[in-house]
Image 1: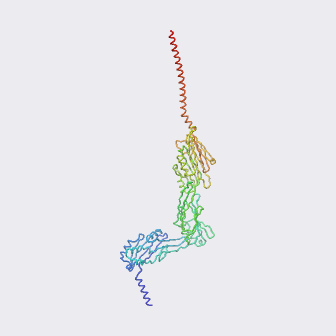
Image 2 (image 1 turned 180 degrees about the vertical axis):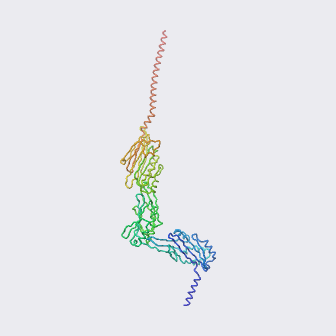
Image 3 (image 1 turned 60 degrees about the horizontal axis):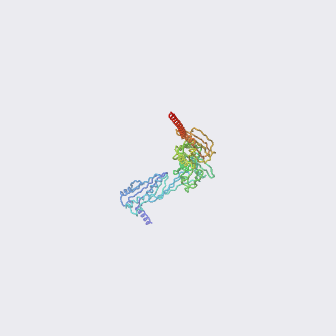
Length: 573
């Protein structure tokens, strides 16, 4: 028995003499946003230092100073024959921590962090696939490469005592890799997220949480406090209640921000972009993207059933923790009335102002997207006026072909064309056709409008008609300018013909026929009359010339007879 005690004491003494290399202790001070500090202390006893290290303390200090990674700072101290080097890894977020740890390791780190403080998920999950010993690899690598330790002793150099994690007043301790799972889950049946587009263009969203009676019995007070800043209503179900939170927003980004507040998440966001349809500038195609983070509502399987609908269309129904959603929707701004004022001069000079009036059914941003569609070589002065009752107007100036190109690009199936021909009997004749095809309202409401046509061409007599006749509810003809066309007329021009057609419907065709017959014949008379007068004078002179010639012939004959008679009388004497 005495021999066994002696052997045991001898073995214990040998262990003390042999030492245990470098004592490594580690602490992690962690905040809720995953900012904090990881502290790793390496303590060398004098005996261990000389046993493992082939150099002086000055050599060790120099090596640490030259080799310490940028991610770490350190201090050194000595006490009771022990030398301690303390290394600090400070980080501001989980991403910052991952980056700095990745720089220290020779393999890819895997870090799991979950923190819940909701009535449904509470506690901490914190796991790592590395230890503080792994984070100090750089040191014993530098020692080995500097030949201060050999390969055999490098594996025995470190003795990791423990790692302590301090989180929100609670301390956890692990001896190897950090592996904390202290999360508790309270039953939650499902979540429904429903979004609708309002008549004004705003978005309204309702988020419903289906709560079993068991959860209400245990956590009803906490749940009310958790959602206290929201507009809450309750609905009874067969096994508990549904908590409903309603809100609206001017646009999808604002809606997603409010959703993030309801879900108590920093990772939820939403964006959208709007483009106009090629067939209708008043129809917007909207691309939505939303990221949902439901970490505070998951169950033990790390998921929660969620149904997501938009304008009564289900976008997905699945059990998720986080999800990114992309989908497309469309909205059309209905038109109430329109007014088209056209001033005709020639096929190279046509001007018109087009106005659309409507009650706003889209957002201000979407209206600005619609406004940008009205562009082109002949389009100018595009304006949006009004808040709720809005008028969008623009002016066109140019040739018929150029104006047609820009207008038909906005409204397909519209066509503007003109043609001119000349006849000797009737002079120049001009035809102008303006076929307009506006988008029909999806709500079934008929469009009402005016088409005002004015001609400033003083040389043409005008005939104007609108087809089909059934869409014309009233026609006014007058010879004075109206407000609709006055802005399009130059100071030196006068209106010679004007028609105002009151219309119902979205399709019409105005036809214009201009003729210069009267002006042609008036012009013809102006240059033909002098010619006729000259001809008459010439004919008169020709006739007079013959008469004079005959008169002089008779006079000559009478004079000759008189001379002969005189000579005969003289000879008889």
